[in-house]
Image (cartoon, rainbow, N blue to C red; front, side, top):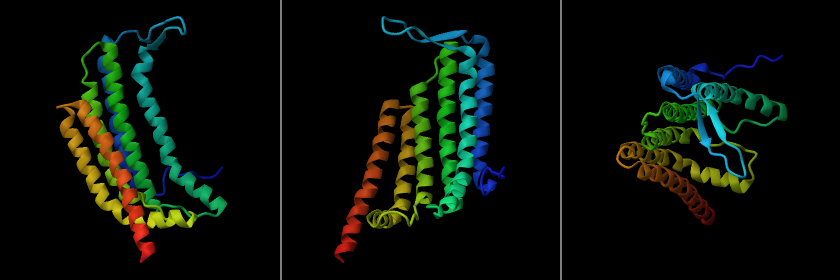
Length: 232
């Protein structure tokens, strides 16, 4: 059986693994603290003529998100190594620099950890009947995720030489735009966090529309650059 490492460089992935560890401990502590006040079960969907009643048990609410996060982290952690092994088998060079690919995976893991921690607090609070500011917390966590996306964007520039010529030219055109676009994403994320506890829905709208608009803008500018270079 081949020796499968978690990553080519654990130092690169370590901040994300620490984030996951903190998230899991935080969720475990929340489950222990809320457990005595949590209902045995919670009806998430009432029965009607077309379907039966949907019920979530207390033990599931207390442990589901930490376990799912650990499983996803294990999967994400081995993905870069699996990608390299598969590409060696088929004789294709990796599209990303190895260390950069692991860093991007680390940002992805951290974003998932943040989202799951907030969701866990919302779920156990619902079982305990406490008033958890779910919308505000989700908006703030989305702002953090947008900041992580901004940090990951410059590292995600593809060097995949197997792309069709048109897509390769587009990649070359958008590449220089990634770094300034990343700074804008960080600003959008920071503004989302600042707005989250003033108007959660406005913050969610800012993060969603701002990110989508920026991504579309990157490729619009890239297409314009590509056409300009073709005419030159």
